[in-house]
Image (cartoon, rainbow, N blue to C red; front, side, top):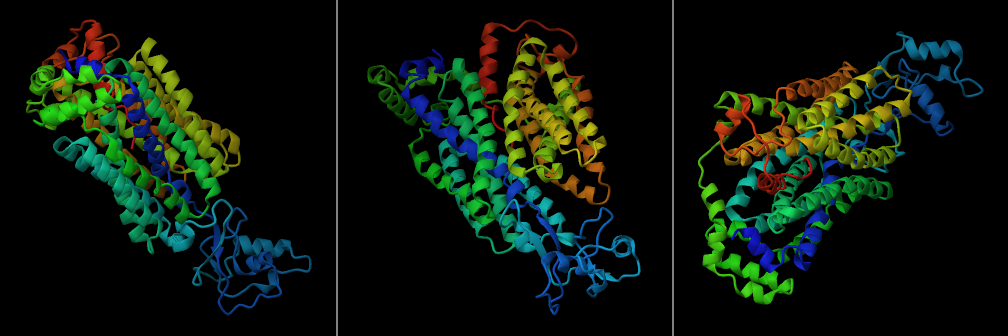
Length: 562
């Protein structure tokens, strides 16, 4: 008898599993809100230098004050970071408009002395009533701090994955999920009431760590309490919760336009998640592997009672339980490390190619998703569009993987994404609709690439080192998410270069994916030698039993990219 049979005995798809999955899936929606929160709390409003403190403008309209205190840039718009040393009264005419000669002087004249914004800035708050940019004046010389804040948050996601991943294997999924929910709630609340930008970054780092803990332990608890036959469906639906969360963020941000209240709004629900997480049952699989068989039996009997199968639950004992987990216990005694991913030629080539795929997918994904203002479209609308495109993208890539193959689907998704991003560089900035359509297509392809590489990577790595392999490529994805905001800073000096990098990276990784072996219909490798044999061309068809094992393994990693 396998553990799956014990799960069937106590009810594998009963009331317990339905409620268990629903309660665990709800926080996934709010994970998306924290991942993309920067789009709204750090939106950059139109701004220009405030007038001199001793400047009296009681009789002038705001437009007239702007005219005589702030010069124009090459596009005829007010400079964001410079003002006249003294008000240029001669630019005023009777009808309140520019004269031709004065306009030329304002735009290109070098004889008028200008200075930095010594008295602060004036902001045009149209999309948000306040942001961290307007509160702490993160503009001009400090504008790079916006991207630095997102990089620090993603650094927290990376650190959290390493910390909470190891702690969960040692102390259990449930207690780490409780801690992560509480950390998210407290860190988010503190971030909302931060009095300075460094404090805000510190608490956002905590949010990033918590997000990894919530994601890792949520999906572990889901997978370990449901049978293999429904894991693909449940995993897909849970993944769509993240997609729905992107849409939910746009709605919340539309009605809550103050960054502090918005941050608080997406953080307070985690107090509720923390409270009801006490109800969750620890994974019986983990309890047995941690030599806590008696507690595992109590949990299984509790599930049986909840599902109306008390009599079947009473039949379970320690001997039966340990017998069902014999295979898992023997597999857990391996001594493989991340270094084994690079020791042999085929494994080394495969790991390098997969690292490129994961890094570039995450890098370009967050490069697009975290810079919505550049498209010149209402940020609430484009957030909804960017979130909604994931729905058809995941459906298309699933069909493609099943009929065309994993490798072709992975290469195609990456290359199409890269090409659309590069084409966008050639589209004039004022063609907002065309630029948005291309960006949406690119973002959809990157979302499809994420779905593909989760499945593809698990099929490529052998059973004995699959956990290490998936952990490595997930880390590469988080590194890509950290680097993405930094690349945007280059745009201040070379406007077209970030787009070239964001578009070039997926194309290069798409080429790298060509060197990966196709796994559609192939058997799952169990050992490193199996991988080396496959690299030499020796292959066979996947048996139905191996397909079930694959589903069982893959759902451990079918989680939203963080």
